[in-house]
Length: 278
Image 1 (cartoon, rainbow, N blue to C red):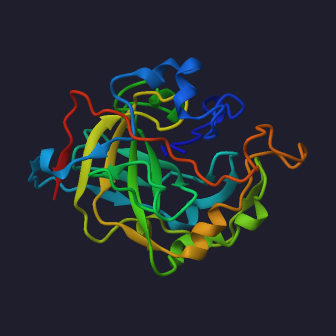
Image 2 (tube, one colour; image 1 turned 45 degrees about the horizontal axis):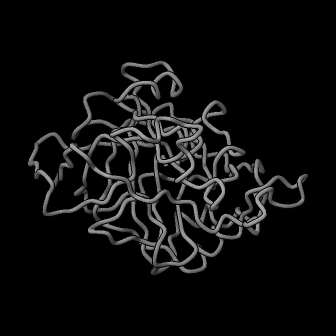
């Protein structure tokens, strides 16, 4: 989730965690004990060790482009909130129907490292997370986040290349959300379906939120095929700030106030099995 990110106000405590040395991922467990769990995310995926699955039950999705409305700087990433009514994610490894709640991105200081999941130890430039919640069993995302099958996050890798036209509908408004908690209404439709690769092969496993509280409530689906994003778009990500405009500066002295990186390093897979669907 993607930051796994802020799901709602009860899941966002930016003063307690971040990506600097003083409050980075290594320190999260002090305030968020779930971060020391055995089903944490992200992980390094080793394709030679996955269980290959051939299934007639394809992963299916339906989204309403007009529903992507609000862009926010959360202090740890940018996030687009979605009115999920009418959206559906089902099939594949999922035993229920899921509704899209939001999408956000993770990136790094350079184009060589920024994704949260890695493949054979290799990073991509960035990683988009589309966060869904189990509407079959639960009445809200807050309720769903308490159980192992409560959330499903689609992870999509970005590599440097040509401008991503659909992502540009977000990127061009980032200058209006330069500070933490800044929000702007996006006046044009964004189609989440266009963030998903045409090649639908993916990896799946059970894991956690990649940001505090690191709850182990996520069915992860990580697409194998990366999409392209331009150098300029990645640069725009790194120009948003992690502090409120009223504060005037970042409260962490070692940081310059910009969200230059916001990815959690990979954690051990442990006894879990990663499956590959084609």
